[in-house]
Image (cartoon, rainbow, N blue to C red):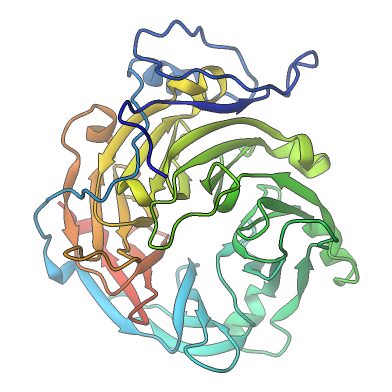
Length: 434
């Protein structure tokens, strides 16, 4: 499905949960321009006034359609990147400083694992041990650093970080799993996981089930996993993937690849997807009614992060070959006018991370569908230039095959990237980026 030539910003649905009298509904606000008269709506979920003022100075953009056009930019120095082989197909990555954790899918027959890598200065990451976990995908720490969650099946596997680092038995503590009943969407497909700022709840995107499973992690841990703590599902569109919690901890952002029940065509170009805004506290108690706004977010949006102050929400639109920036304030007050930055990058962008104090966004151009003439790489984008509508793509770093997920090591000097197709863990010296 291809978006028509007149590119438009369309609000899929809006629900303001902080207004008791408000009812769920659908607004058709196609063709909005910078002159659209939508006054801001006060909200306890909105970012700080400074973030709201800066977003108000930038006119909205049209949402990009599906595209196979990529941007040209210079190649950045190869010496900034180091590639280390890993035993398996790496997917998720998380870092503590001394240690990095990588989810490794089996290269052939056998089970998967969470690999524990020692990291020390300029030396390549060194695999210390493998903790058997069947088919682990996205990884996330609890805020206190005690537990590591790996998306799997219909939920997530919970590991003790201390036990994993020390190599003792019992690193795998238990599993969070959501019951899938008859008539429900197909089970499984857990792909990304996020943890609430207080560490009590976990959220898992179920790519095959059009929903985001919510778990009371604290209850599951207290019970020794005799209960999984399943609370319910946040509704989503087709193929929900990316998850990010706002810095203030009041909102959860989620991407869905397609905004309809029709699956994408083979080779991508499946149609417009969505970015949803979820009331985090309501999701913990009443997930079925926790979505407060949903907007179109290009074709095949797959990952989402926020700026450090929460004012900007960054999304990779994989089948638009574009990095998108949304005003967090406008997502709540004027969703159809919330897109404020749009940067064309390389083929099929997936993972993304903020580096150098949030001044730059690094985007993994995966070329996962093997487009003829396209290449993989890491696009380096100036956040300020993107928001100011100036040329923002500084250049491309080399990468292995199918760069997928990213994590910044504590201290901010090194970026870790999983190169899924070439079975490599990539480290990038971000302090010397141009």
